[in-house]
Image (tube, rainbow, N blue to C red; front, side, top):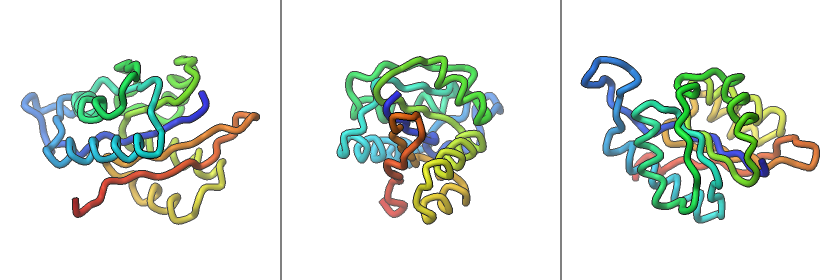
Length: 164
């Protein structure tokens, strides 16, 4: 893997028709923000080759809102990514065995924990690390490149305009 993009799902409804968390759908704002972040990623050339997406409804809908702006990307919906801890996300990434750019669409707190760990290892900007620590926002993405030794290098933070 040359680059990794960690993206938290878009804003979701408070509840679902079934009453369960897994079935929560995106709000209209969540769909718009997800598309806006996909556009921002595409604008800087961060087009994933592979998307690993939690099987939850809100993450699937996040991918659906993004996919038209990120052409040619293979997608895999993974049950194991639903509310996964950072260690499980890392395992899924290793097992994917993908080269190129990989996008992982997941949930807090695991996504936030993984992003924090990579930011610290990458010695990323303190302001960005503070934003992630304050609660990795919905529809936000953080990107990392990897050097020849496999160490992460901060490659950008993307968040939709909160007023948009």
